[in-house]
Length: 410
Image (cartoon, rainbow, N blue to C red; front, side, top):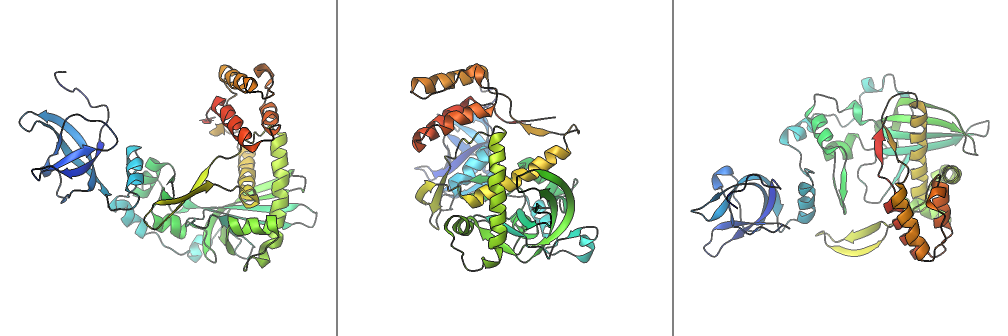
């Protein structure tokens, strides 16, 4: 090799170490690198110490130094900092865990309360029995629900989504930041939000007892799950309860009503009844229940894992899942004649599916020929017929790997 024309990975993350001579050297994280790396100290005014982790850009090989010269790009953290490895993983995958000073300054200018002028033209739902359900640790509640029985016996279900677009517009620094991130990213038990926490955990979080601007889908639906009509409205709500999945599952599955939930039992039971009907209709349409192999980790205050257990998917989780799918179904129906992007799943690749079914058959599991798989119903039947939960989980995983990835298409 006479010279490096282009580095395959730029920039890279390195730990700052002290050499025997007391000089600061850079050691790449998680990647082999045979040559010494020396930081050009003129590329940063930050005082670095051993134990710091930084991102650098590699330059030319210096014959006198007998090392590759690197220039400072950004500061990642220090070895004594909690979740340093998660920050490193984020940065390595082009997820910036920090916002620019300009973005944070702009976020500070957004009011944390709603003015009377902002309510003009919005449907006032502040007196409705609206509530959110989420994990115990949730700080950014971006959706809430409501339900009531109409005189004709149908349900009126409400799905209320935080109206972030009211605050973030093209031309704003925060708009550009949100576009770069595309979404909030969840790694282990920390989140790198799409917007600064003062917004995502503040004015855009549907907190209990606080007025918030929302986009609401109001659906009239029969007890048999048939959508009669729906409408989309700009609205203002005041959530009456920030619920947890644990408490809701206690009510719906054990009949235990935790303190403070007494006024919501009827609404939760109505939603649960509707959720079961929607689940049944979903399966009739060919929905494949691949189960869930997600795990949940518990941590101490320093970020160390102290326990790992399967993530529970109870009645409360299903209730919210089916409510959000009902919302999406209404939007898809509304947009069906518009050339807008839809999330779609292509039919499985015939060869991949054939290999998956062949593997299952050789393992003693009854399957159908791949050419007989016309929709998800045949696959769902294979999975459903397996009584052993552990075996079913493995089979679902094998079938999942034969499926096509979701994509967006008009």
